[in-house]
Image (tube, rainbow, N blue to C red; front, side, top):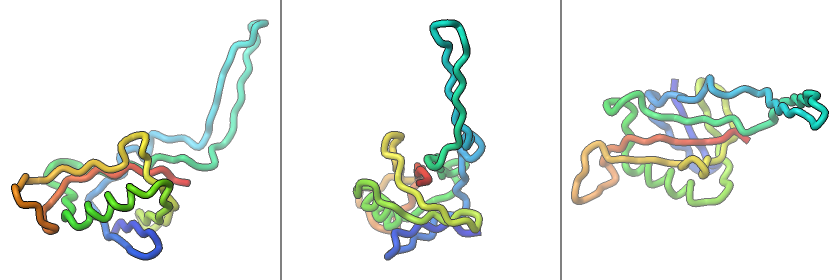
Length: 131
């Protein structure tokens, strides 16, 4: 199943071998617990409306390579503050923005060449937040 990312004008097809690394680390339930001055317990519970992290990364150095041209587009999109995009993953479309506080885009060449060209291959980790 393909993974796509669209800004409404351009759609990138991302490598389907990227996996959602933090899929099971998030809960829609938010809770804060405090002990009051009298020793009573103050528990507040609510449901998060947004903010689910979506980190897409390769399983290892042999998987999910992306061409430099895709990395360039991602880098340009990440340079636009609060840019909303549509990420389609496993058939579900989600509105996302880059998670700049956690390094939105990491890209390392599979092989470093002195002359960089758009067809060079990269290993990328993409960090989004559902809004």
